[in-house]
Length: 326
Ligand SMILES: [Zn+2]
Image (cartoon, rainbow, N blue to C red; front, side, top):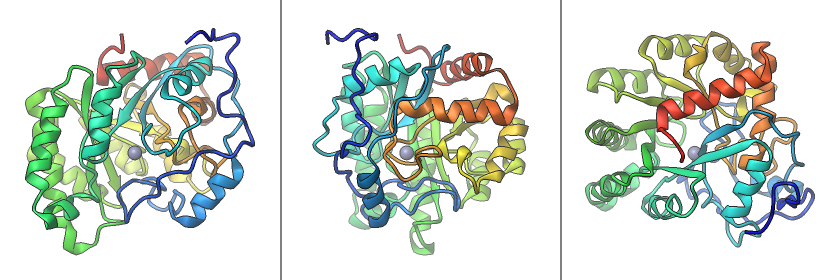
């Protein structure tokens, strides 16, 4: 890699046709987010709009770097952008690292591999809550969880995630195996001393109840926080981290802005959930780690706080959860 930051070309040229995204197979991903109605639909219409819009322009770089604590580099096909170039673009925008997140065995294996190749990446591995009923139905859930535990032991895998409960995409019939899978991830996180990244979609009460009943790991992150001020107060009480994504910038997300205002500043993180949940005003176009500054600037505006101080706080919080990137 011979590019210096100064000569770095924007690898996601605005207006170019982005790569074809792997579309979610009946809820294999959290396309559209966990936003309890704040997200896009994640379906064919959303895919068409992503392809139509192209990548958003480079933001003004952040002076104090932050970290994207939840992104999916594997949700692309035929990428014109290597992970190295994507991380260079992020770094040039003031996003100095990321947590690559697995959602099934294939993407968790991918995660375990790429975190060894670039020091700007740490990883999380898990089976997505919407996959749990499918795996249980096929009789392969236990074996898959055993492999997740083996992958999670890697030194650069710092979290079990994304796991949790999703009542938006999984109906009543699948909830037993979804809960069983969530509880196994909680158990693995505790035994291995890793953080837990939770996907909570329309399931706030049961996520909280499960954490309290089983005993939460030391470090818990509600990824793409989708609750209101009430859930933020519960997180404050238990020391659970709240990770705000592009959804906090959406016009219809007043509940998230209220939550951000009551969240303990020591428990706030930021993320993209890329390629989904692109911040306003680029909603519907593909997301990537270099776009975090749009979300962080919106957060500073909501909090009426100084941008550099917020960025320093976000990075300190992120390293408190996942440890050092170096
Ligand atoms: Zn995700």
